[in-house]
Image (cartoon, rainbow, N blue to C red; front, side, top):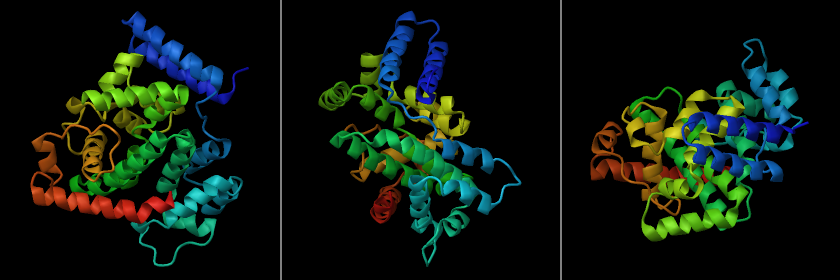
Length: 303
């Protein structure tokens, strides 16, 4: 009988095969890669408490107290919710002291995102300076996505935050599978001044955006976030400034300008996209850089 993690990975393999049906070599490469991950049981499954909470949130009749009773069984998740409720984003003068109050501050929609983020954060627990830097970068992109989503009146700032936090989750999966190999890919990309996704495809026959989307699709949680994760390096899919992928593209770029990028800086978005976000001028870009730098300084300790 397969454990939950194995089932998750096998689902990803099946999706990878469907995406690349015409490329036998790539399909086998995907299978070999994920077979290794399966054997070492390195991919997380959605925790039992988290999965139950997500199902409960989707029930319009559920109460806050019912959710709190379930959440209290997971100390780590409780700590994450308390930390999230103390974010300056929610504007609370007095920080919540208990789980019930924290859930009331965060709200059901944002609670769902905290649960998902908490589950995937397990991927970032790799003993590596590169993993630490990637987490800092991911948080910067998340904060940027939350802030800059307002520039284009995106309806769900916390969905944008979640997408930003997990936009590079595929890189963490690659690190888990073979840390030394992935570190070499990143170093070579930096040395050659190349695009990371191109080097990843050269090495693995797929890139981290593909893997990240596959993982999120396998969890069957948020199709919009999964799609944005898969497209955030594809400029052709980011033409609409109100799309989540475009928000990630811009947030990723501004994070790099704040010196909060990963080892390889992304290319600049096109002028039309920067104009839509109010960043086409030096003044507009400087304002964005200051806003993100201040937010990262204020909130990084909460994570």
